[in-house]
Image 1 (cartoon, rainbow over the protein chains, first blue to last red):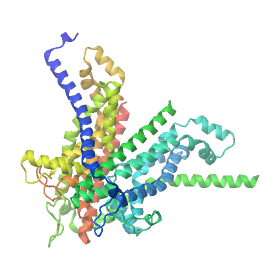
Image 2 (tube, rainbow over the protein chains, first blue to last red):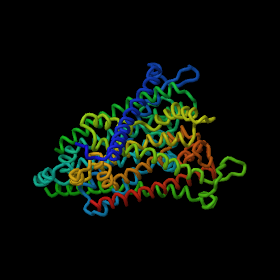
Image 3 (cartoon, rainbow over the protein chains, first blue to last red):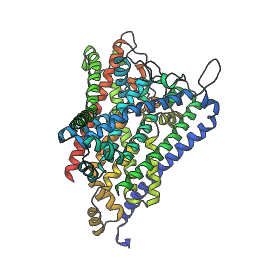
Image 4 (tube, chains in turn green, purple):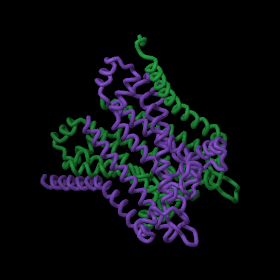
Length: 287
Length: 293
């Protein structure tokens, strides 16, 4: 059938096709290589002792329990603050805002926020939370910095989900005499819950992977902190990513670095899977 | 009854105010960030002199007679980003073509999952892999005393921008109207020719968006680059240890003081201006692309 095609064209097509398949294969191979390498080098060093102790020169132990706890604390603190703000902003944009120009300005602001690199968030967090509000280098300063960073994600996913809530729901609630807030609380928000959950999962993913923004705000300490202690000013603590950086770059302890990398990788896989499931649920609702 | 009504009204008004407040908080954040960066970044530029600061070729912040020229950092960031784009965008574009036009359902799913996972891997993990795999490899292949240089950083950055380049390009390619493809096929072009000579050119504004996004990601990356670039304030050259704008800020922040610290904030301000310009370009590209459709 292709006999009418000149030789030059056939070569060109074959080359382009090959390039496409090579590049697609390359991406898959790269991922497999990365996962394989990290698991092979990291998993053998993950021991119960590593997971349940803190680094101590006196006892001669190395452990990443403080870093695991700090990561959980920062995730919790960030989400507790960013969710109400982000969902509130999305509700404002989708339900309250009348003026198109106002909506455009706010959307422009969120786009700008999502484009700012995390190292700048780190510096700004240092200037605003650590110094200006004198929280000191602390987990709470880190969490507040991450609030600004993850805000665009929460706003965006919630907004998309709000857009899929049929207008009939709103009209029905209003027609039955509900006030606007009552309508939003009882009808709109419950129907948009999957978008909010997606926003949560994506934010957790960003927080788990974040390091540059936390280096100067949450610090590098590796002490075990209690839940209430963790939100106090001046209580510094490094998350898993920051600990990985310190172990690899400043101490050259690659075994621990790779076991942290393996843990981070497994977390990434879980978060990715969760995000996929949430997105699937969202799509089913749309159709 | 009227009392109930009044409290309900008050509640409505209060909630309205709360939501409006949340909505404008994002705007406030942008303004506060800008204000803090300008206020803490401008004094040092004033003291050093804007010309000496931006175009000074020597950065020696801890010398007895400190010099604060950030041209090496600016050029390193520009070259590093350009290198990452030159390597990452063609690969990413090919991959996007595969996902959008040339794959069956199942294999596309696998590649797409791989892309998603790559984008989720933390940047320190990329940095660690770069340190352990790429840096020694570069040292061996090019027979260098140290493999931590601009070239290694470019490789790591190219991998890191792939996911965003791929997903944005794929969306752009998929958005090209089906008629273009059908018309081209009807005229006797093969599937591959149609993709590369009709569909990809038609999707060029979307692909440009992907490139600009990639630039934004590459120029803002700090941790991974810090781990593989050697972190010495040289003028950029492919096989020399270099320092990017981002790593210049990160590497001295913890022990800096006085004018040195202020100069670091000035570097952050310069980086911020770069990012704003990229955002502006992005907005223009997206808007123009929207008009074309």
